[in-house]
Image 1 (spheres, rainbow, N blue to C red):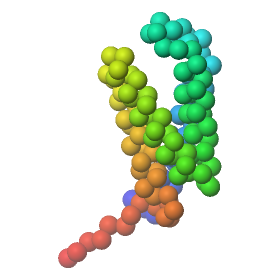
Image 2: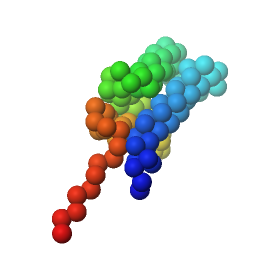
Image 3: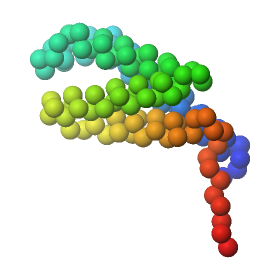
Image 4: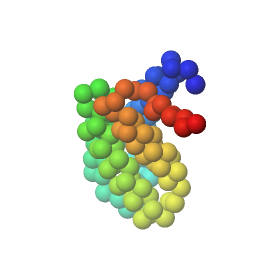
Length: 124
């Protein structure tokens, strides 16, 4: 892989994850069908704006260079809560949350370093 692609990979992943999570969080908070669905499952109505609002804040923090670590850790906590809620409600397809979680972990792993992937050392 050439160095130009390598230098863009992690920032592009961070922006992609951040914007997708931000869009999904806004949809979760402002969707009437989501409110109806949560009501049918017996969850309190305050849960939607509490979790969704926190997720919006975390996604925005994750997108800002100075607050990547805080936003990323907050996103990881929110994803863990969301996975737990889904599993407790019998909804076992949490694959999307797992992909988001790993993408955030990868972005956090390269925060504070240059945004490039590590160089592979070849011992010969």
